[in-house]
Picture (spheres, rainbow, N blue to C red):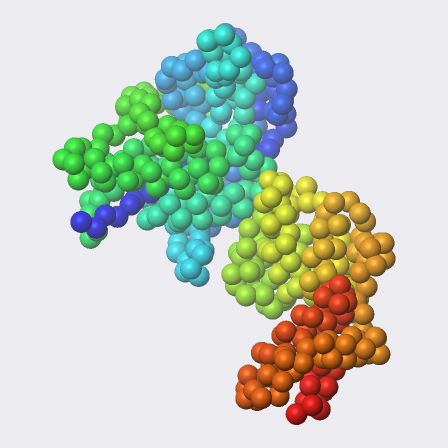
Length: 483
């Protein structure tokens, strides 16, 4: 049997407002537990919520970026449920009339293909608190600092058919919200969290299978692993004669498995009703258009510009523009050295490897855009070879200064003096009688490849500092003279 995975994502994005959705309490991350939860966030008697206009502006920005319908009238409702980190007993959210309606975004995959994923809607809601389960001697603690922080919950249609597509969609959403500046998108701090709805069905079937919801996954890598392992669990269960139960499951990254958390609630279980403390919010066309005019250049537009303006491939342009910080780094370096393709190669090669090794983002890169551009300038003007450049790059990353400083300090300047190189070529030829004889007896088509031995010996003699172009020119002339 051939199975098909069906995936829809619910992405929760904390908005980077200074205060909470319905109160003036701070949203600053990292404060001591329970120091940023006010009476309004806890719905204490006598308090009334007041909507945060900035949260609405951010939500409209997101909707416009997703080519989505904007809800000119949006209504807050109470979603009733009990959970320890929700002392109000309900969450103020949107259901029937959300701030953002249907839209779509295009995702790009590693094989060069692309597809469009539909957005069902995105709604504003308040975040809950956070349960803490460590350092409490077997008990749990509740931190309510996060309670009331504004979120947009972004709900996709079940359009994705693989874990790779789900990750590509999630990365695209992350890219859009960070480009807009409405969220830092830091998944490790909970600024962006993902629930994945996963089901399986036989290839060719139209009816959707029973879905499970994987709750609160906090990294791109874990989203991919969780979807794969859950889909396989469902397939194995069905093939063994069992049935998938609709439920909420948690992903255990340490064991790489999903486990049941609770039976899946439906809308009726939450007893939604319009919030009596909040009036409907209405937006006019002028308000929406003013926000549209303030939108920055978004990832797709920037990617297209990078391809046309800098001559990059569509794949390279897409990679470089996934994160706003990477795009800015690229433009700064390319603008200084005028070598966009080399900058792209170094960013996706040596720099990416360095950042992965150190497990840091490009914002914390120990090699600045100016330093990378300076290094590339020294490659282009033949001060150093590409091979030596990798040594210089590592030295820059270790804090030894810019390219010029490292080259001077370590004596790495490339030897281009024809007299010095000619002397090295003569010595290598004189000490390689057997190789010279083989070269003389070889077919003309094989001789270029045989020159590699001589080039390697000359580079060794020069400690890697001889100019390869000069070596090849002089070496060929001298070997051909022996024919």
